[in-house]
Length: 563
Image (tube, rainbow, N blue to C red; front, side, top):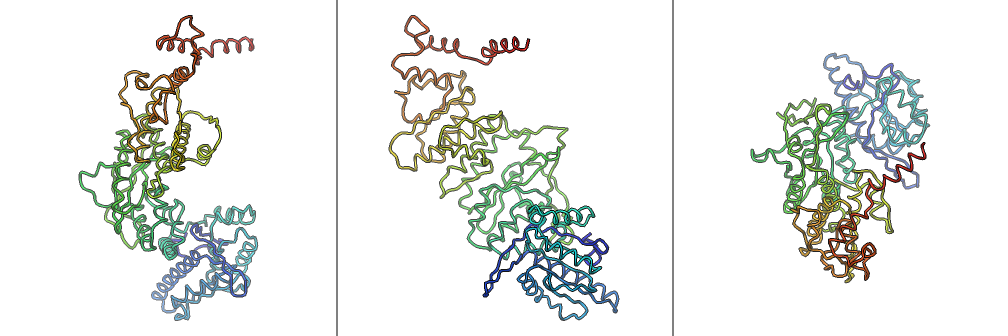
């Protein structure tokens, strides 16, 4: 309805609501100690709406020399917001046009009367029912178009039934709008945010006016968000926001022919490099390309991250890489945009019913790559942060941080290996930074030889990267048999070299080493003669309780119970 014009919309419809999620309520205290609130973004939105109305009115004036006067009233619950809006509108000199009248007043000063449009700035009333009463009073005392500006989430999340009913009624009548649906309103809000350094970070979420309704969904890695926060000047942050807006509509920096199949892409910006790539997400039974922004770094610091990311991308399947790097172009069809690009990239979409897209070459590689990215972000020193996107959930972080023994229960694929490996390396880091000169002996025991091998190689590579120490031992990963990866390990913890810790072994190897550490072998009780290595392996296999061996007696017992 906004495309019909603010002056003509909503008449006879009671009122309309413009959802502005980017504004923040600020509390001001005057010299007398009285408190009042402002919302700079809503103030900028009011100015934009009135400016649009002014242009509409000028067109009417030019088509009809006897064009009728226009009277707009802006209402707010807060005196400070009223004064802020007055200051904003003073720059536009509407007083020079005696037939275009704008008044700004508090809700208590509203007297009704014949006006053409009313704009109600809620500011951030936290669900106050008094404001709803004022809105209803305005609605019944004038036939004008009434536009409510506010943050739906803020207003209805306070369990205030009055606001919930009001917003529900607006939606039911089709009079609920998002601010980004109007190009001029969107630009005004972004401009307002960029004038306030402490609010620029609010634009970096998918529901912000900058990104909510863009051609490309943008995903930010935590490392990028931290780097953005650390930028020294507001000018740099503004430049990043402008670049992100261009990327979200499909603009891309030129690529050489040899770069078109590369996963990682870079955009240069005032001595910095922004690193980004395409990813694929599943939503509503469709796979679609999205834009993932990894980081923004000074030019001389980006090569290290580029190398790490390229190593990470090597874990992707050929099919996944091909889909991520597939390019489809289209026209820039944004209405009223100040700059129209002749050609932009558009996301490619695939129906889930037709294909399943597996991102990683193997499941273990997927889990280990996930773990690698998480641990890198967790354990690298603050002087060289690398916080890549696979972050621990709050529940997983609680397990990592818990100082006592822990039992972790979860089905396959829920991140148990990621959590335990992260916990192991976090303890390594804490021990190294403590300055202690003793040895930290950590074991990671798993049943699967294959998973053991994968985890061991990954931990060694991470240790080298994180701690800068090449003394960690990495075995050859081309083993033909499960036990070959332990051929250089003794069957005793007593003679184990210190550089083998943290030690990643299978449960079978752990039993053999534990038995070799004690003075008298536990397994000799099963043999009348001294037990050698071959005999020990046979005894372990014979006595080991497998799933099949466990089920045989118990399932029989359960069947008898049922009968």
